[in-house]
Image (tube, rainbow, N blue to C red):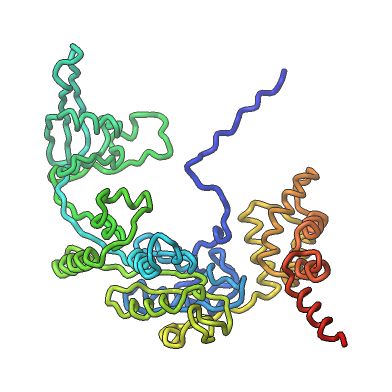
Amino acid sequence: MAELKLSESRDLTRIERIGAHSHIRGLGLDSSLEPRAVSEGMVGQTAARKSAGVILQMIKEGKIAGRAVLLAGQPGTGKTAIAMGMAKSLGLETPFAMIAGSELFSLEMSKTEALMQAFRKAIGVRIKEETEIIEGEVVEVQIDRPAVAGAASKTGKLTLKTTDMETVYDLGAKMIEALGKEKVQSGDVIAIDKASGKITKLGRSFSRSRDYDAMGPQTKFVQCPDGELQKRKEVVHCVTLHEIDVINSRTQGFLALFTGDTGEIRAEVREQIDTKVAEWKEEGKAEIVPGVLFIDEVHILDIECFSFLNRALENEMAPILVVATNRGITTIRGTNYKSPHGIPIDLLDRLLIICTQPYTEDEIRKILDIRSQEEDVEMSEEAKRLLTTIGVETSLRYAIHLITAAALACQKRKGKVVEMEDINRVYHLFLDVKRSTQYLMEYQNQYMFNELGDEEEDDSNAMKP
């Protein structure tokens, strides 16, 4: 009898793609801000991680605003990884906006408008609001459906209780529909927002825990509420200034947030919002949470953007600016002048500079171990040693790219563990930068527009009598 193969049902709601920094969970620091050797996906760079940890602590305590930090180092030394670690360590409450320098040069809006929107995305507003709610355990839900179709709409009664009291509420059509959507039944503990009529299921009552023999893993048991059924509760909403700008500037309101078609936002709108937020702050209704704006490849920005950054950092509602670059002394875009990292001296003077160092052989080995685990690839000890040597001789990024390629080569020969032969095979299939450059030098005359060939021809012509 043929064996039945059941197709695996996959959860499509989860994003299962593995990114370049998906293994990073934080900065890997202990309680005294000392970096651990290998922790939360971070390896090495102890001095840079400790510096980032100090900045992070200052952000959490709200003691640093309008400051800027520069992460400088060679390519492949973990600058973006440190920024990602900072984002993960900050948590969900603090806004973290991340852009690449090239993103600002879009045709739809000016560079300064794109920068301003990025700045506003990194400033959070925690708005406090008092609402009246009805909270209790459902004793009974009674819904009367009309016998004749087209007659009066459904009516019903809802009985709620706390440890002190019990009340019966009459239900309208909308409330009956909301109860049906939430699948509310007797024994559930629910909260009803009086203003909006929104129903939130808090869980099942402990008194009903023995109603069924088996429960789903998502079933949560809570105590029956005590005191009055009607309570006043403080609700906190966390939004960014950019979200408030978009909602107030566009005719379609918050829908623009989903479409991404925000367009240019007028300065008057922003001024009005800033005034309103300042009023709320004075009244104690709102709290401003300065977040972090991370600009990768900052040398791509031109002199106009740098002038804007200088001015924007002086604003009282400025976030912490973290920028990263892998350039040495290079030309400032938009000028003929050279400067360290391609950043003007006046802006460099405002930056706290964190340098990253090249990884040692031992650190490269640990990073490759973490990436193999993240990409679910089993590798033999000899293969790992060979891959580490390749990482030292070429680059860490090239070695990381070979992991999945070697796993596919191993799969093709129906192996379970990646061996040296698989690494060797993909090493000869895919070239690194050094070997590719060598190949170009050998066959340069066969390529179009090769500058080296033209120079040699000029030299040979010059040497002729």
